[in-house]
Each structure stands twice: as structure tokens, then as C-alpha cells.
Amino acid sequence: MRPLLLALLLSLLGCVPQAGSSPAPSGQTLLLNNGLIQGRTVRLPALEFDLPGVPVAAATSGGRLYAGFPFQLLVYNQGQLENSLPLSSTPRFLKGWPGVVVGLDEGVYTPGRGLLRLREWALDALAVKDQLYWVDGKAFYAGSSTLAEGPYKRVAGDERRVMALTAASAFIYPDRRSINLPEEPLAAVVVEDLYMLGAKGLYRISASGLQVAFQPGDYSAIATDGETLSLLQDGRLVRFNLSLGGL
Image (tube, rainbow, N blue to C red; front, side, top):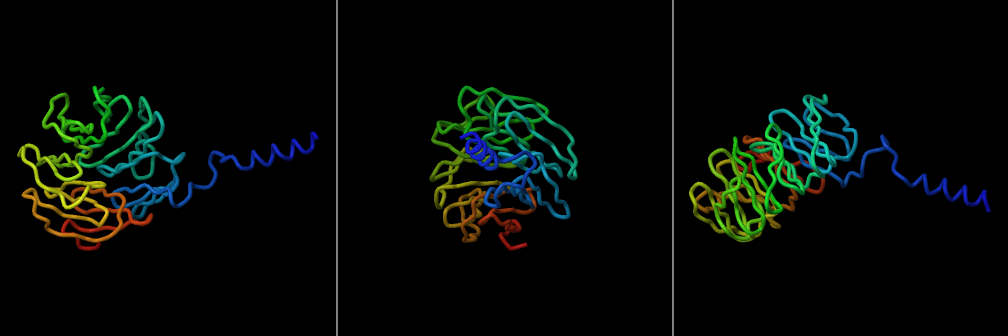
């Protein structure tokens, strides 16, 4: 019996992933602005390097890569580890535009300012200069102030305006008015106009609510640096300019 038990044990151990082994399956892909993370391999223009493990979330900002792991945020500059920042839990989301923000169970973390503990669980958040905007499915907030009540689940913006999105509309701040959306948003960024992913494709919608352009496709994520758009489609990077022309 002992040889049989030993053989079974060795067989089971061979199925356990080992640290430093091959990257995660190619289906586990995270979108970066102008790049991807496939497994633990970062692929950016003219730069490719491996992370110590598979991140749960990631974003780029100002030439730096922010990779989120359980209880840790790693910051890379040109492929070299620049900083390791402790987190209070595992990141639920991580954004790089217009500022870096990490959603955690206890609140929202921004590098340099630390953790802002929130009375509700943030579904999404946005860092713009020194202000933090967030939504919890009940209202849209700026820090501890309520800007509008409603079933807001996503927030996107730039230094000019911030938009909180429901399944059918977007509340625009500081204009304090709403526009209708063509379908339920899956993800969104704002670079003056709203660039929104829906089940049918990518929409460009002006602050007045006009649909300026549309690009059909089954995109699953979007990122921007304020000059171009990066989208994830079937594990591939697809890029557009702000007029939705291909790059």
C-alpha cells in the first residue's frame, strides 16, 4: 500500500502550480493603456517583462505600471520595480486615468494619500487631482459629500467633468444634469466626451448626449491615457484614436 500511496501523492503534487512556473493561461488577460498583461507577463511597446506573480488588477499612469496583488501594490518604471506599497486587502479594481485609484474592501486607496475609509462599499471610483469620486449603487459621491442619489454603478471622468453611470443614463458633474445612454454600460472612460462600452460595441457620446461615433465589436475592457483608447477584444489589444479611427 505504501508505494501506491506515495505514487498517488506525487501525482497530486504534480498538479499543484509552482511559484515561478509558466504564466497563467492566455485567457487571463488584463488590459493596460497600449499594452496587456498575459498571465504574469507584461507586454508594452518595446518593453516586455515578468511580474513575480499573476496580478488581480493593473493599470498604467504617467509611464508607470501599477500591479495589484493581495495586500500589495507594485509600482514599475521601465520594467524595474520602483516601489512596493502595502494594501489592506485584495484590490477589486484599479484605475490609472486620470489618477491612480485602487478599490478595496475597506475603502479606496490612492498612492500618496493612503486609504479613504468609506461608509459603503465602493463599486467604482475615480481620482481627479485631490478629489475622489465614487459610487455605491445608491448614490454618486465626492469624498464624503453626496452629489446625486441614484443607482450609479460606474464613474468615469477627466479634469473637466465627471460622469456617474446607471444602466440607462449618465449624471454629469459639475453640470449637474443627466443624459440618456444607448445601452447599459459595461465600462467607460471620459476624455471630454464619454467613451462607453456596451454589448454592441464602443460609443462616443458628447456631454450634450449626442452619439458622435460608434464602433461595433465585443470589447470587454477600455483604458486611456487621454490621447488614445485601448480596448480588449478576445484577449487582443485593439487601439483607436479619440475619433474612433483605428491605430
